[in-house]
Length: 143
Length: 143
Image (tube, rainbow over all chains, first blue to last red; front, side):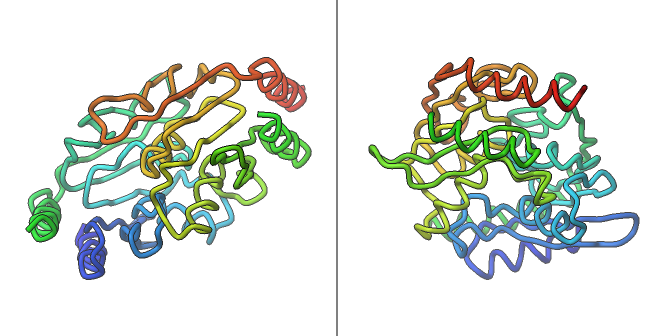
């Protein structure tokens, strides 16, 4: 989560919503990304999406069933959907997102027995620190 | 839907799950895409995602609030999530997807009052033809 927070800080420095993520296999970080929606004008520019793109491009494989996604904020529907498509087995996230979170807050899409894949989710890791980055960012933007 | 079906047929010819989509503004088709997951080894390679990427790249804008997505099959969670992120106002789709559809079948994520955007969905357009392409594809693959 330390590395994901560094990514989030880089996003903040660019004026992006400060959310960062890393892809982990075993003990190794194999990819890093942060939110870049504004800079790239890309509605898909969430950290998790960029991470999955990176790893699948590097491996030339769509099935990433040994990759853990570590992300500072609870993933949204798009990102959980992408992790389901990529067969990601596990997501570890920091703060919850009560407005759009899809791993427990608004939806439990990561663990829906009707779907063809389920993702193990661990929440609340460095949640205060992850949430503080977002609070500071939005407070500054509002005022 | 005719153009989206042509895209789906191109996907089938490449051995991809035959789903196609077009982006429409007013009376004009501004982008076309079909599923390319296998060819590109990309778990995000659904027609709707590629379409949104194309249009936002061309326009250098993440907010696509005048774009209607026309797609042969009901969008999954990832794709509805991406359309929500892009502020797509309207989706028109062909056949329902009872196993993964997120515009009415498994989820009604397109129209969730808790989220910050809602998408008008029209279903069942050329549904038989759209569904037949998928049935033929999966029947051939199984046998």
